[in-house]
Image 1: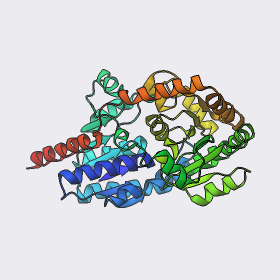
Image 2: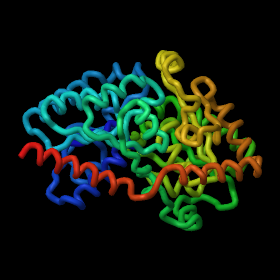
Image 3: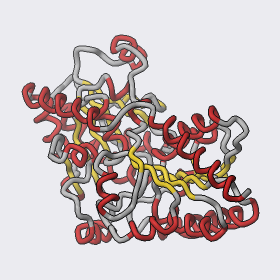
Image 4: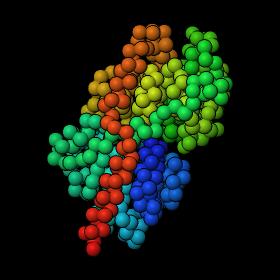
Length: 379
């Protein structure tokens, strides 16, 4: 059983399933995920796009569905006794499910552990009780957990294996209908409906302002699989700027851009690995933001800046993530060659901090080891 409640978890989970099947073709998977996990043959009980939430207030709109999925998985843990439960991030749901798995005698493998170093550090003690083995993907996490008395495995970041351009700049721009000589701005508003509704209008407002400054500026939006195309197009068409919307193709769309405007999340790290300057945006409800200011213990919200331990790229949070501020931050990067080049150098260094390639293959072996050890205990 595998549970990935977010789009990024679907990506990493699919790569893990593929590697596990390569080691043991007899394995059969079921659980929660998206199109990538489904493509790897996982039988989906629910889709991650229906489970993903941003902040506290959005939980209430999906709580009945999320609870129904939880009870269904709990029942399957008891009746079908899978050989392993693989959890990917999504901590509030997954830690509760881990406790049920532990009670049912199903071993728990947590892949991409909760970001307890940012908030709710006390959850480490809960994790230590109910998780049999945990893998982390950020370089400082192993030392953090060790300081809390819990051994975890740092296996490197799985994005190192997947983030790469598939075409030359000339080929990609020709396919996208973009001009090489004019500035290209990539828009990445996130994969959740609430992010699209909150951030894409501000991104489009910024695009209008950037177009006023750079008359030949071009805009491209690689649409995540989980996003409703009609929702995105409706917002885009309400603004007098043309945007090339492409399904997926994030690495070619972003990798050949001059700058990206990115919703905080995995996409910021993907953009960093492509060494593209960016502006990071984050917005949530006022209630969630107020609670977050009291609980979150990190200086930055962007993974790029957190990993670097300093501000490499600008972050615009809550009210600051408005069209004028976004355009201003982007203009400063596009208009200052020295600043632009320094940001690219700093982003290139991020890759060196993320470990070695083949993280999914190493994780698959650890998961199989746990299955085999559990089988031995049962025998």
